[in-house]
Length: 318
Image 1 (cartoon, rainbow, N blue to C red):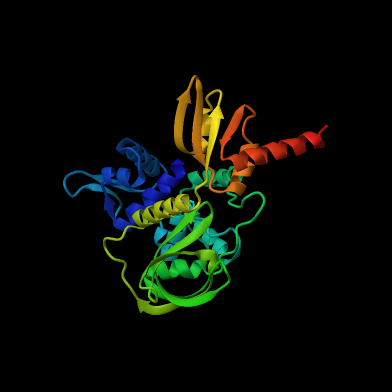
Image 2 (cartoon, rainbow, N blue to C red):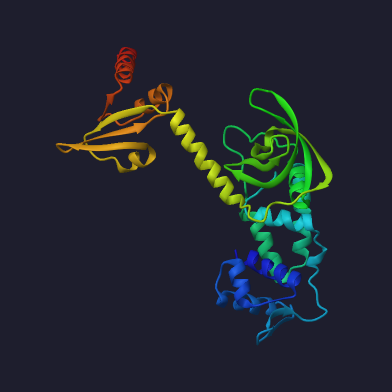
């Protein structure tokens, strides 16, 4: 939305004093022409925008003028930034209230011409991050984890494993990740002496410590997460390997895209494909949902299951 870009331009210029149009364009992933159009809109709205040329030139606000964006403290700016990325800590409770207060402060600094845009946006956009059938589990320590990460302070965390076993450990938070509505903390565990990934909902207690730490300069959160995700998928494929061979009388490109294909072979106009269905139980459910003209060739135990299941269904419906 253009309104969001205007807010971002004001935040950047007031925080840095002066920026070139090209720098703003790079930061906001838009064109230099769009930046100049936005600056014209802000100027027309009564904001004293100043542009200067030359090596030390750039775009700034008139000396001595402020739009009061500095009244937002660091935590509020971070919440706004995370919200813009789709990181919603929750619509209810303390976190949601703090976020709304930060947004209200920011709205009050905008020119009157944009108040109508804000009012319309509130009425026509609604973000609901809860799934249809089950709500996301609560994350009681999310604000403490975020604060520890941002302030570079260690935390003493109590962690509950899947089997219910609890442990207490000192962590150095390296980053927070959201995947499909679930939060994960990447942190250096001092007792294990290695980087680990923790599911935030299982951190039942967190105490912010006074001791600070430093994240290594060469650490990349994105690279770490993608690498661990790839390792996890590969280990799952190795441990959950259940090949099923299917005969297709006609091509099913969309269906094939949804399957983990291990091999494809053609024979007299027909195709046989071998796919991984991970385990016998999963395969039973998957093959019964396949189109009727797809035949399971192997393994024999799965063919026998389909035969018995089909006989039971036939008996039930006749």
